[in-house]
Image 1 (cartoon, rainbow, N blue to C red):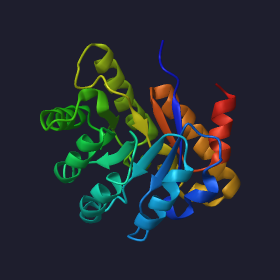
Image 2 (image 1 turned 180 degrees about the horizontal axis):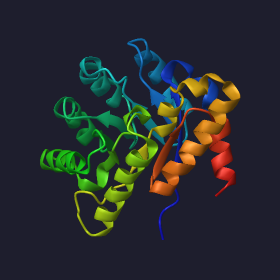
Image 3 (image 1 turned 120 degrees about the horizontal axis):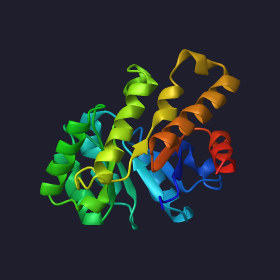
Length: 221
């Protein structure tokens, strides 16, 4: 039986304290600026559930700051994410801490497999890898993004050990960037519907930006 999908509620580190007691399986803490280092140090003792530490998305900043933040973690966490430009500098801290690692590649099953092989060869156990096929800012269309997720799942189930890993989706973050999401009420429904689609495509982890959307998905389980 497929494991239950894990719901991640993500906050910028600077705003995370107000969300600690929300309903979620994993709390996502997104690094944005250098001052977040001290805030993270203060927050971690207050959090009694699993953590996902998320990079800023700026490669030049992440290769410097993310290893520092990883070294502050005292229990297994999810580190999100590395790509082909950053993995060599971030990977040692992930391996040393025994963390799980999200590997992002641009909507291509062959690139996903290649990155999994490279990180595995560099010492990361396969059972510590989480695949992020990205969603391309929705620009490719939902159907294309989800079809890649489905294909990864099928290949993994066919015993390709380099694709037999959990999938994570940040689709709700991309949904929030659309012009339709400027309407706060519509933004909520867009997040719910995109999360439902990611779940149907086989995502094992879904990252939410709105507590109300996460609660709605939990009620449908």
